[in-house]
Length: 361
Image: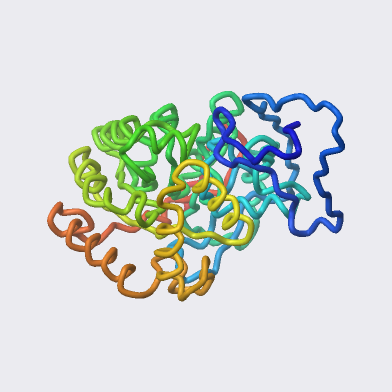
């Protein structure tokens, strides 16, 4: 463990610098240097995965800020390590820290495909597009060998269920066979999140995410395969990444992206302190300026949870960002047409593999 008097420091491949206690933990620990020798902390921390045997995998959403009603998160926690991740506080419900625990102690949806089939088979199930990986990235590094997301997509492809995917990993191309099948019937769309085009900044902000160039190549390959693809410029961080908005949109449009969106940095619960700690370590010269602009767009606070304001912010600076985004999209032809809704009429309830399809007569 680190010496008691040492301040938190960056670890190889990790975004958070520290591991603050979860807010629901009644126990409080204080670090005291008793003078005894303590070993230096290791440069890296291994990732562990445990099964999450939830009885359901589909969650519902009623937020007016988010354009979907159903989602699946194959994992809890995310080894991508984005220091700004708004989902970090959910680890507190597990009695774990939203800091390094969130990046290193992961849970995967065991038997996800079987549970999903049972949910889709229920009488009265209403077909609505499912958003895949909205809280934690469905294609985070451990998906390469866990293949939980792949198993979910296999069910959705077999049942012709519409799905939208949001990721910052080129691993999505592994499932091109399933995605092209879904795309033929207007059953899928994919968006790649791009925060910055600066490789050095990316390594500090999102240690284990795909490089910006790889994400743009992913948009290009998806588009070439006939899969509707777009970009999310998210989160926009004032005085750190906001100057890149137009360049990111230009690069995505050149790669074949059809649409774009953006969100402003959100700092709920423990994320506030984790992000400020990260700023002090990596960008001490501009930390005060970044936080000052955030408070300016959050009504004087560091976070504004209100619907209608939490994604875009308020005030002159937030209005400037909205105007810049709108004008850039107009110039580049992004969001120029009405975005076609995914088809919900082709769904067929799951049946035994190889069973004859219902004809619907």
